Length: 299
Length: 295
Figure 1: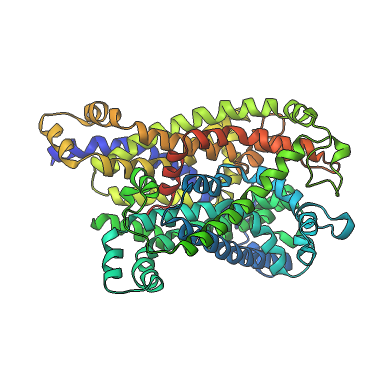
Figure 2: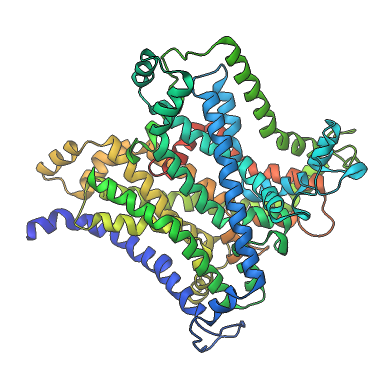
């Protein structure tokens, strides 16, 4: 027994600081936030607060503004994921057989990923200027220069929830489609050439080749992409902050609402919003983490 | 493809052009090329407008002239943006470099143990660490602020270094774990053990010398995400001690926005990460792949 501990003991010791740090800074602080969310700490004052159970949560889910932010988040997530997957997959399909100058296309498609969401938000807030007609600015002006005036629109400043949040999703799609392209491209190139050859020898058309041979091989990647994009979208904050400013009811999502609540020093309510956000992310991520770890354990 | 491939070989796989005949006609190749160029223009449109606007005088940024080249080219917006951003840039640099190095070192040690020096319950610990990668930081931000206040950590760069190191550990651990699982055969470790080498000796003699590309990936990843972070900056620092994202938000916020200076500012703040991306692009992709876990 002692001998075995001597072999694995040092390893456990190496991980101990990490476990302690994350134990406090991730799990401990989440517990702390949760605890705050159960109190009536609605001001910045220090000192003891009274427990009010789940009152803050009940209030949130009875509140028009919070429900609005959840709906915005839902629409944003759908628009963002669909847009990014379409562009990413399309670019990967266009590139996967190899074209001249491929590395240029790849680099350009991927570069927005290296830029901060604040920097791209500053640029896109300018591009998504709502003015139209003679005073049109940004993309609307470009549309009129290209004689595509019918495309001019008020972007996020007017219209339905769908057009509003799709306008917010557009910069995010611009920024992350290249990432999805890279994932799918690695996927396509990881498929052995013999599989394609065999399918062609069997007389499969190009369409059937993709539909029945190549796409099924990519489903694990598609799942990863979905999880990554989903959890990014749920946490999206910087971009909205930079494009519309934090105080826009039209584009408010829970992450932004939490910040606004905190500015008014309502700690209990801010904590409750943060915990709801965490719960939504956890529903998406926990099964994925469990699946990943279990699968690796089997290998 | 397993997670083990994530860092090195997935990035290599992207560049591996297929050797088999692609079975497409000249016409379909032409269509493909035209589409690619259109998409290229779409991605580069914002770049064009940022660059030209950053060289314009304020009289030149009228609605009608927005997409035209500057009437008179001027460096004034760049000078103005740099004046505002310079202290933020220095803070971001002194923050991102140590945060990247420390988190990478911890990640390397953790990754080695989780991949090649396993102990009972290692999988549980791995899951414990992995979940930390996905949490929305809003869920810890309030008590984090209180903790830093109570520990009396100096607001600004020191606070952010600590925060980014701690919350960067999960991704660095994951990247190194996958990297070592791919490049270090179990047999080497076992024979070192038979020869009586302990953990530290094995790590120093066998693992560390072959870790360079792993370090490049985590350093780039950490540097980029620390540099681009806005959430921690907003919650934990102020204008007088915050990083460059905060500076840019200040430069381009408010009522009377100087568009030319904002655009120059967006470019200035993006240069460090863009240079890293251009020079070390293939490792950058490696980090992205690792983020995909089972990519």
